[in-house]
Amino acid sequence: MTFDVIVLTQKMPDTVAVLDGLGAAGDELRVDLPDHDGVIQLCDDTGGTLLSVEAPILIQVPDEAERLLGERSAGLEPPLWRVEVRAAERDGADEIARRFAEALVQRLGGMVWDGGAGP
Image (cartoon, rainbow, N blue to C red; front, side, top):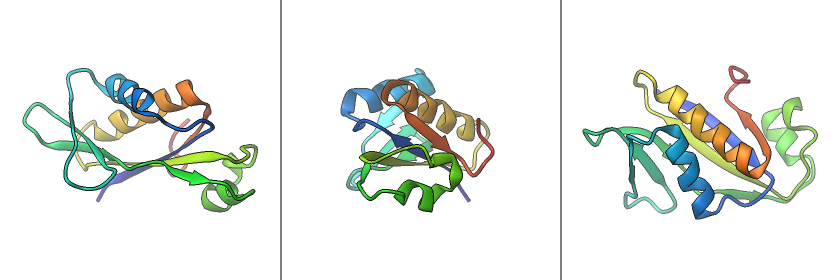
């Protein structure tokens, strides 16, 4: 099972923003670009995957964010970018996912959803 985090950003997550977010998640971790289209992985020093970050998806329909994520996203108006992050079931991977998500929001505006467990 994975721990999923969804990030809604108000600006498109470009390469620099994503790489900065991955760096904030843990500078001792390694970025991997597997053969899966649009997926970036963050790995530990043994090559084990800690989290996967999917390519951003543009949300243009009014109220779509609220429909997907509930009332917490009610104030965010399109265009928005949805980034899905999946943390492996390993000690500390969920916290790495949260740090990445918070770094993206800090840089691009928006919100983090992690099933209600996050800030």
